[in-house]
Image (cartoon, helix red, strand yellow):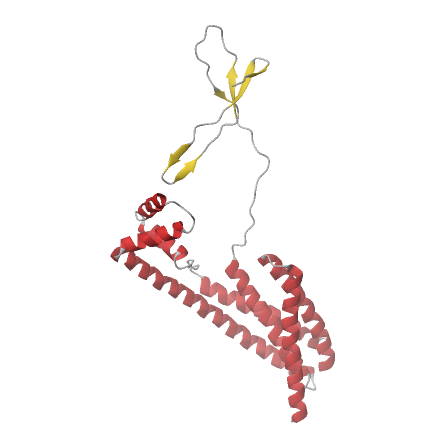
Length: 287
């Protein structure tokens, strides 16, 4: 081991001994220790740790955590932009007055927002009830057949390549806290996350409001024009633009290709509106 002199101090790179346990091995290293200059006649040299060097690089991970909220907005806004636009476009092919299109559009937005919100509420309640029933089943199995449940824990960690000894250690330690044990089984065996206590209510409100916001945009073109055809032109421009912007930011938030996602959402909305328009025009000519 070579000592490199710096004035009255010597710097010696050292590495601490590695420690092992049944759960794994961990190796720690100490960068540098300062060795005071040996005093003549001394037998021992004391190693004094230097002050730790602070890192100026702070790593931050950006993850999407509110996926349920984002999905509710996507459902409500996408339907709100598409369905009223398709209805208004279809009525524009048959109606002679903007008031008919506006009245029908408002009625559809009210009914659609209630229906969508109710659907979100029922979906949220079903999710909560399903989680509660599965929790009860896991709780009974932990009490009745604990060894089989431990074996399922070991299977989970075996998939990650942990040794058999480590698997048994983790399963035995986890079994000491039954609540944490059940939470682990719910998440990693069944793939279920505990829903928020207000999940149903929040989902209903988010979907309903997003539907209303999206539905008002297509109808605004008929408010500022005099004829259905003129209103359809303004409505189409506004809706296509909003669909593209909505699809772009939805894709950005969810980590998908932004332009591709924007074009996909826009195409779906335009296709639905075009289909409704031509069907309404065809029935108008037949009747």
